[in-house]
Picture 1: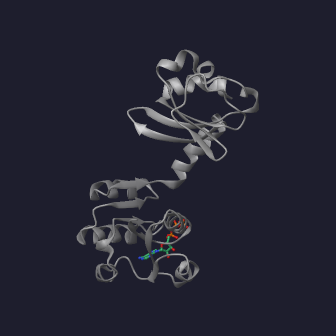
Picture 2: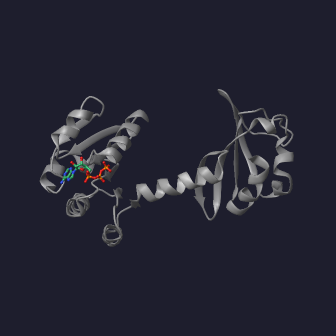
Length: 217
Ligand code: ATP
């Protein structure tokens, strides 16, 4: 279990903090607006009214003891930047920040935060990918153009063997596992026969995975 601070409990910050709680972590939620604190008080480990531009206030909340801090203050650029500076001064090493503009991104890059998040853009890309490849439930970029993708096996592919689906791509794409209802099959053999609505997880380079799309959709 890790301990996280989520600063700013608007739509983005509250969704992130509730998911971290669901994943079994400890979360200190901070917002300057009592309305947002009241809404989440019963759902987070701690929910505290505080101004994140006040370094002393953050120090008293033991933010330096957190494994990472997520700054989810969107519209108020000044507050977001001051909050990041305070976290840096307090020695927080993992600082993830939601950015809302190009200028915000540029300043955060200069400040050397761990990760800059653009939720609208990132979600927009995911939605476009989902529209383009509706059979892809999830994907994970592993770096160096390598991806893990979870594919929903459509009824038309019922009875197909994995080797038939991968065909020429077999040398470059690895079938990692198959999830069938509540069971996971791994390792999975090339002659494994798929059922409709199995989830097939493949690993490989983006261009090869893309070339398989027409067969899988
Ligand atoms: P979202 O899209 O996540 O709803 P947003 O991008 O519109 O949010 P804001 O509403 O500006 O972003 O900020 C998110 C939260 O951050 C709000 O609940 C706001 O009260 C809180 N917040 C703003 N400034 C501070 C501050 N100085 N200290 C603590 N919380 C703050």
